Length: 196
Ligand SMILES: [Ca+2]
Image (cartoon, rainbow, N blue to C red):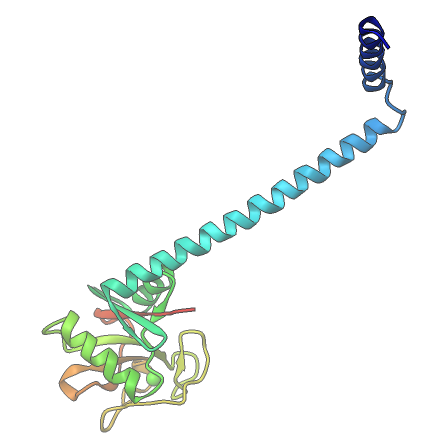
């Protein structure tokens, strides 16, 4: 084949390719394409949702790290104190808004840790709220989620407020022992954050 032959062959191939590409689409291929595009959109949406969730959980982790750095970290919990006096409910709501609850010691180690941190971070403050209350059933103390607690550190002759005092606080002048108090009293507080 001469040079012209090659050229003709090339032109024919190009023409054929062009024809192949511009062939009319089958009647249902438009639908197929649209459904493929929908699939792609759904995939993208799933990926974006996943990324969004990851970003949010990273944000939460970062917020938690900030809390742990500003406050103190003991075992799998971080505590952060607030030098602001609030009613029990307001204090608890503030902790919830920050992703935690009022500090609720579950054993003597946690109680000592909260007490020591309270002493250091709220110097001169003798009392602060714990996330423990008997406002639903008098005498039955539960945590802020309504779950019964097994560890108690009541001071002598406490709790003694009956139906008038339904919220627990930690007393520094009693070495971290607890007492019941009127929930509408204004007290400082420590929030507790569970580390995942
Ligand atoms: Ca009570």
